[in-house]
Image (cartoon, rainbow, N blue to C red; front, side, top):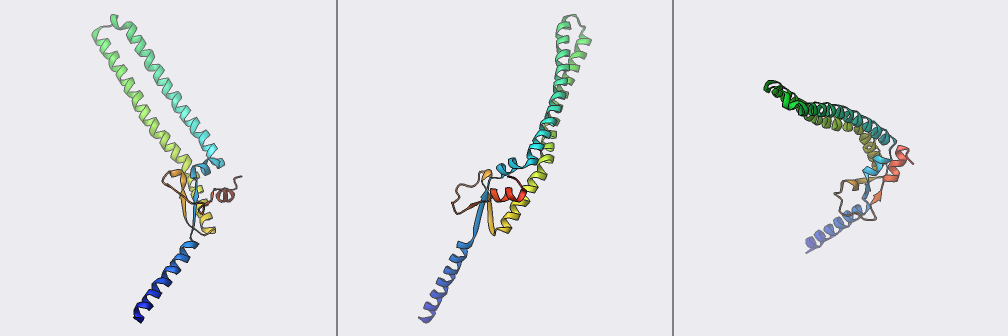
Length: 171
């Protein structure tokens, strides 16, 4: 009987100890997209990305103008062309069309690569500031509400965005 009472006491004390520890745990949340957009580097990266995209678009437009001109010339002269010249011009048009398609694919890949190149240092800086704030303020978890995976968070969860902005010197 004494063993049963002692065992129950140990369980109650262990549960109370766990309960006290659980109440001391600090959880926080942040909207990482809002943080990134508040960083001065973000605007600079966006401007660079717009310039890069515009340069690619200009090159694409040039290719498209060349193709359209050759297509129009071909359509106007089609009835006067011999079979050999018609076939040669059609092959040239197909090569140009394939070149345009290849350029579009390559341009899309280059834009993704450039976006990654421009944004990764900014993301790394933001993540480091989040980690620093979490450590300095004793948080055990920081949830990113921008990811959309958080279905609920309590008022007891602390929004650390102001602390991280302060850490990064953003007003």
